[in-house]
Image 1 (tube, rainbow over the protein chains, first blue to last red):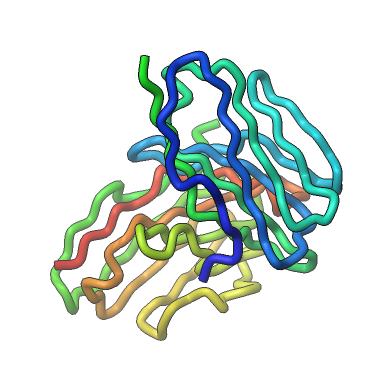
Image 2: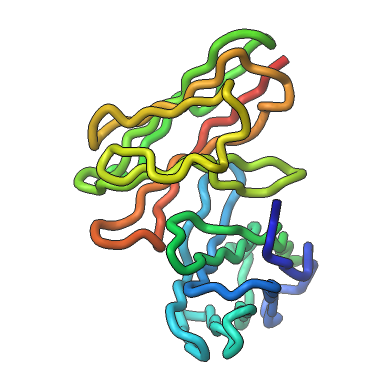
Length: 111
Length: 114
């Protein structure tokens, strides 16, 4: 079952607003990733984080690897209609190849 | 680069039938993952191959599920016999050479078992 608690489950915002979502876990992860999935497509990698405390940006997206290695957040600034989709956090544990995914945050933007 | 290619995109089958899902990873990538996505359980890892060898199949739900990677450019996930609870979207993912984390996902196969 899922080991990552992602919140919120859904967000309804106005275009131009900033967005923040996060993932927490009771377990330590060595790597955190954030993916975006659109209908009928596979998840697409947005940001990868490799060190505790790391803060990384990709355009309007910013993500941080929590200092305890048990959490991460993703911020989207100045949202635009194409930001609509489901955002997933994913973690990779030490000595484990596969990813553990959060349940996703569904983002809806009102123009 | 065509990315990870999965086929078919959609599959509808009757309960009890055998189903085979196919994946062509990114050329040159020597690792491959199969994931399953459902509303109830989200994205779950089924099996991981490295250099065509299954390394971790602990996520394979039952003996009805089997996966093979006969060569670096092809993998199959087979369900025999299929059941309605197997209905899901099945993704194949291919990480970059030398890495395992940043997996590139295919578009998935939506399986419906009726």
